[in-house]
Length: 206
Ligand code: 5GP
Image (cartoon, rainbow, N blue to C red; front, top):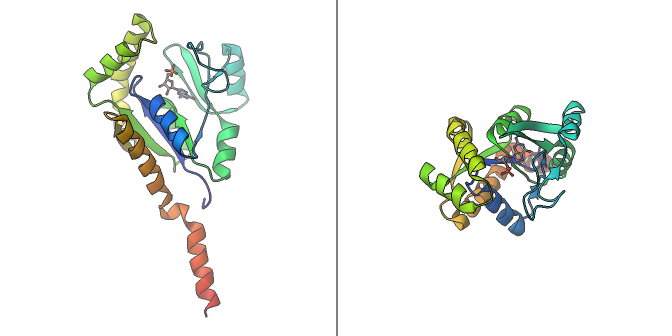
């Protein structure tokens, strides 16, 4: 456990600003942002292998069968999932790994990685959320309505998370997430090397 990175799950309502927070975090700090697989069509400007690995449903289902995903979920008609290999490699190398995933996936990650840190990003109110989704202008009216409907169902997950990040001010939210991750490193369970050193030094002095 000692030199392992922290596995961080960042979830939140669509339009809560998770993506922007993530981008700022990886710009500034050496976090590893996991690239998910999805069957959703790329949005304008999205790059395969950077924003997502865009796959057909057939390919995605093969990945599920072959156990290549840590978790996967269906979200408004498309599959989304976290590739296992890259995440496990980075954690083993001591890197903190960020997953930006929806809540069903978040719960599955927690089952497999009980030490995962679960953060839930939300605007200050539900009304704010609706306005952000409409203002973003990247989805059709139909899609926006489905995402709002989904968000109202997702409220039930909030209390299963470890921390709520209120994304009112982007800068504050970025700092909040970074500080929580850094504090996590101070947990005794991540400090077994340090404890071991104390024991060894004490023994040497005997
Ligand atoms: P979008 O279509 O807006 O990029 O993503 C839709 C939702 O899918 C977001 O809530 C996003 O966090 C979630 N998502 C993205 N990648 C994954 C993943 O690998 N697993 C799960 N469970 N959800 C994901």
